[in-house]
Structures are given as structure tokens and as C-alpha cells.
Image (cartoon, rainbow, N blue to C red; front, side, top):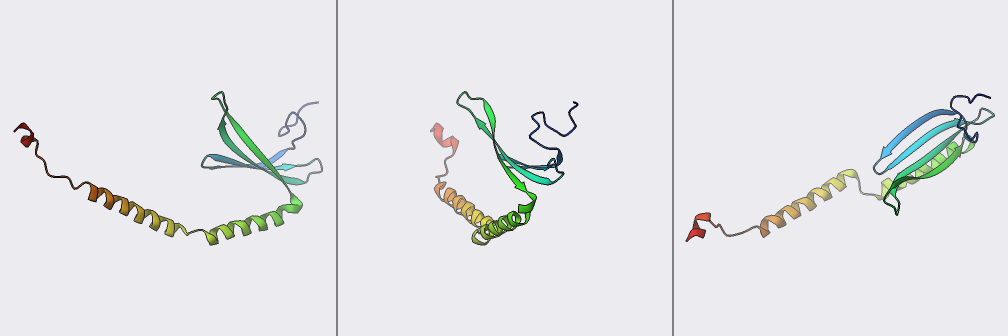
Length: 127
């Protein structure tokens, strides 16, 4: 029997309908829409992180979440609520930029005050 395009060799994964890759810093997320034997759809979300083993060689650590159609709405509501809560308790981007700027100004002023050296001319060294 010939392997149908989109099916994996082990037969446990179903046809991939759609795939989206999101690179986010040190992690990569894969959003894959697949179909079941009954032509129903589900989503797999895979988080992949590059890790180094004891032997110094790298490997990818993966975590996979299966999300079924009947759970989409409740999952999306929960995710939205959690993200909104984080945004409400976290400083805004403008506040972080302002904090970073004032911190950089303080460091710069500190360096300037520490660099009040006397004015030495190289000609004075020969005397």
C-alpha cells in the first residue's frame, strides 16, 4: 500500500492541514492543524528548545500539547484571560523604556563623576 502524502510513517499522526512556525527568542513554537480518520480537526502546539547534552552535543527538547476542536473556545478564553491578567499587572512597555532610560542616565552620570581625573599632559611626563 502506498503512503499517502502528508501521513507519517508510523501511522499515528494524521494528515497535516496547516502549519505555522513561530520563532520566539530561544524557543520555537509549531502550530499544526491535523485531521483525524473521521475528517475532524485538531491542533498540536509544540514548543521546541535547543539544549546541550553532557557530551556537548545539542538536541531539541520538545513539549507537545494536543488541542481538540471541542476545547478550542474554552482554551482560547483561558489563554486570553491569562495574557490579559499578565498585561494588567506588568508595567507597560512605555514604563519599561522609561525605567531603562533613567537607569542608563544614572549609570552615565555615575561614570562621568568617577572620571574626574586631573588633566595630565604627556609632555609633563618627560620632566
